[in-house]
Image (cartoon, rainbow, N blue to C red; front, side, top):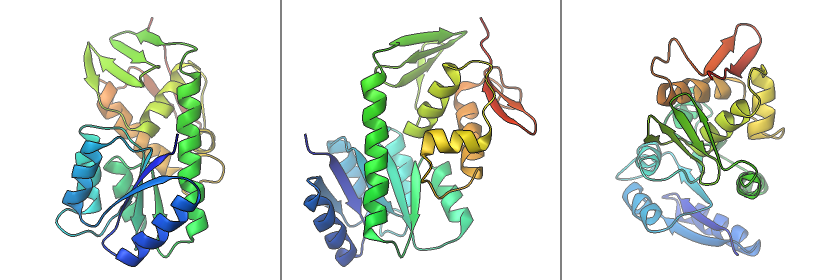
Length: 231
């Protein structure tokens, strides 16, 4: 089945070029040219990847990302024209899974998209191993990639779920930030370890009663992060 990609950018030549290149690889590509159009498209169809520009009319890429996260965990790659680190971190804060800085090489874009799709496919194929696990008031539905705290679903991004799943199934094993970056994002990921810190912080805000005194995801100072089984 063809992988579905939504390309969102107000520069029509860029959209045309990306669309042509992805379709050459057998992908099904939809396009949007402003923020509102992007949100509507994402509501109508579940995409394998959303390629989302930061600077958009009507709604910014960050606002689009935030709104999509309210109803879907589909992977989102932000396109930012600025090399500014704060833009990249801000994109991750709003729930993006990855970012690419403009001007970009189309081969890099395709490689990132394929890497995210490959990891998503791998996750879904291994989800049968353990369908559901419970720790304290947290239940993790591995098959459907959903997490519940005290019976209420919490909306995790694809990368947040990947991080949690890795730590949960390796309790008390301390992973360095570099290890987490390599395992969850891949060795070819150009970002730095602050990406891990942002995701861990956001994950704690969602699953911990008191994020400043975590019950599940702990920090081993100077080393990394680990999951502590409460049972």
